[in-house]
Amino acid sequence: PRQFFVGGNFKMNGVAQSITDIVNNLNAAKLDNSTEVVISPPAIYLALTRELADPKIGVAAQNVYDKPNGAFTGEISVEQLRDTKINWAVIGHSERRVILKETDEFIARKTKAAIEGGVSVIFCIGETLEEREANKTIEVVTRQLNAAAKELSAEQWEKVVIAYEPVWAIGTGKVATTEQAQEVHAAIRKWLESISAHAQENVRIIYGGSVSEKNCRELATQPDVDGFLVGGASLKPAFVDIINARI
Ligand code: 13P
Image (cartoon, rainbow, N blue to C red; front, side, top):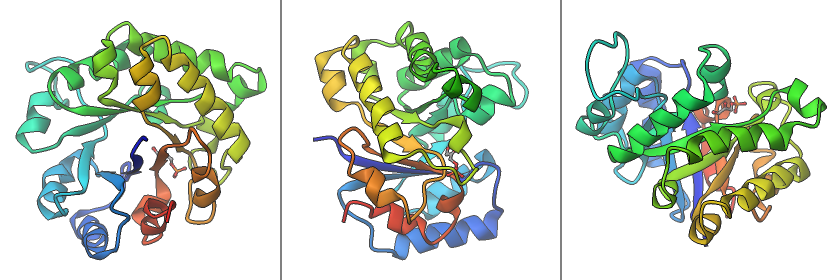
């Protein structure tokens, strides 16, 4: 069975004090021991978060660069993450795809660089509202996955958590229905067959987009929903209820 996984993506929110409060609250809370928890603060607070957080809580960068070092102003390398004890990175978030114009190929290269450098990846995919309405959801997520598949070996996929985040559900309060989420997750699971039987069985597929303490339990009943990637609610005490969605 796949371990339930809940990520908290703080995005560009928080300052040292509020992030300290969030982490202290998580440290003190009773979290489901069988859930893997990974939080992702802004880059400048990664080291602070790693220092404060209970060792069983993972910490993820919200981005990483594909080159090992050099003249890349503003970027952070995989080695620098490892040096700061950061073992996870969120890659391909729709806000980076849409606002920062990151391409499928660039995202795939960053994913490969992270995994080769020992950093596991929360790999984000998902369609826009326009793409969903044009019945292109499966085509879009397949294209995004195929780009990564060109770069990764079957073994490397085991270091990936796939986050299905429909763009129309992110920050909108418009969560996907359990049926919509399960349908796409099942299609992704089917796609994983092209990687390996082992990957198909073991790679976690988590859902993101307006997940809350109210809707998480029903989503978590679905056979291919292996957890969540939470934005807004990860900044609030209710994040604990989402982590505990299965108990
Ligand atoms: P919200 O939970 O705020 O909709 O954000 C989801 C998300 O983008 C997580 O990466």
